[in-house]
Image: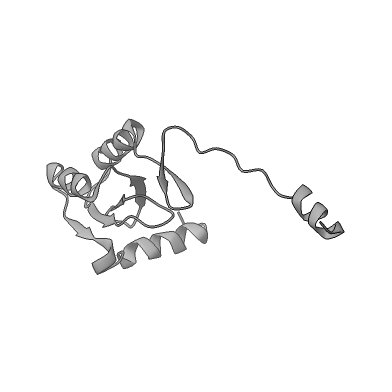
Amino acid sequence: MGLFDKLRRRGRPRMNRPAKDAARTGSTTVRAADAADAKHLNDWVATRRGIEGFVEPRTAVNDVTVLLVAHDGEWTRRRVPSAKWAHEFCNHHQIPSYDAAVVGVPQRMRDWNRRKKAGEI
């Protein structure tokens, strides 16, 4: 064993164990959707108008999410149990839903982000 091998071993960062309620995907840990996410989505839908839903697929970093965009571009994103659940949620609230991987996100959302960053909102 050389001098540098000893130093290399000593400087290794310790890995923490994943949370018990988190889903495991590859080498990353992702928090699963919960009742608080569903409550937030329901509350958000009740206080906005002209909403569209965009279902985002699972990735290596994130679980399935639903992106809700209001008529003015204001938006929210939350984890959901599945893409089917997201589409059923939108159907229940009479919100059109789209697959974000196919159609992308609406321009009004990007415009809202730009206005917010500029301090206009």
